[in-house]
Image (cartoon, rainbow, N blue to C red):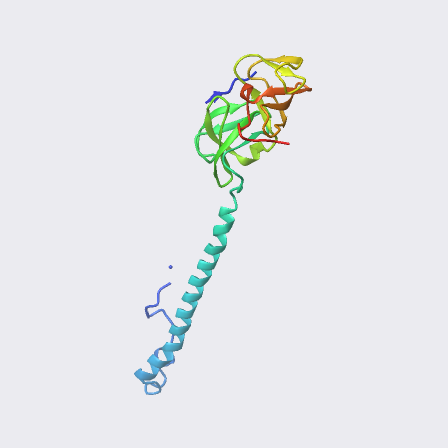
Length: 213
C-alpha cells in the first residue's frame, strides 16, 4: 500500500403426495375403483402445475424489475469527465469493490481526478500523474479543480500574456476552476484566495476543447 505525496418442486406422484380416499379409506374396498382414483388425482396435479408456472412467472418478473435497478447504479454522465476528491483520505483500489486491495491512499481533499470508467457504485479514476484505480462514488464530487503542472507559473490579472502577474504558483499546487471562455487560451482560476488567469497548458483539470462559463 502506498500513499500519494502532494504538496426445487417435483411433479412426480409419490406415496407421500396427495392422499386419496382410495388409499386412506379401507372400510369399503369396493367404494372406489382404480379409474376413479386417477380422476381424483388429476385436479391436484393441475393445481401443482399451475403453482409451478406462477412461481416461474414471478421469478421472471422480479428479475426484469431488478435489471433496470442495477443499471441505474451508473451515473449516465459522460466519460471521461473531471471531478475532485471529496475527502482528505481516499483509498484507490485495484478493482471496483472493497474486496480489492488498496494501491494508493490520497490525502488531499479537492484534488482533481478524471473519471474514465464506471461499474455500479464504483468509479475508475486517473490522476494528473497517470495513476489509475477505483474509488467509491461517495468519495467524489463534481467541484472542478486544477493542479499546476510543469514549472512555476504566473497567475495573471487578465487573460493576456502581457497582463500583470498576481502571483507565482509552484507545480502541484491545486486551485479551483472558475471559468474557461469559449475560444480562449486562458482559464480563470482561484488559488489561495487569489483569482487570476492561467493558460490551459499550464495546469491539469480541463480538456482543450472544453469551455466553462
